Length: 65
Image: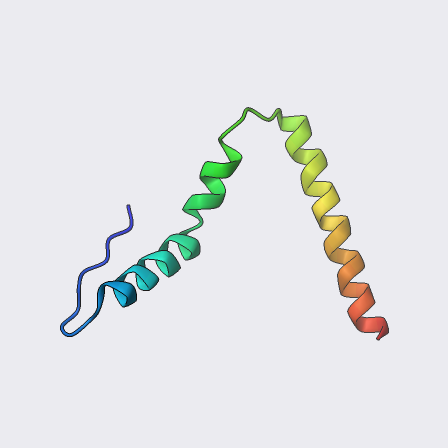
């Protein structure tokens, strides 16, 4: 659970921004999005493989430029 305490002289907007950063950094939202629907293990492996291929292609493109 992500907890953020109000600092002295801190506005509500600043507090909310710090909270959002902590939530994003913890990866909680991505876990929740992934668990929204059931995805079989084979499907997860297939998606991971596609992501890895995409990452490698992007990396190669940056080296070629």
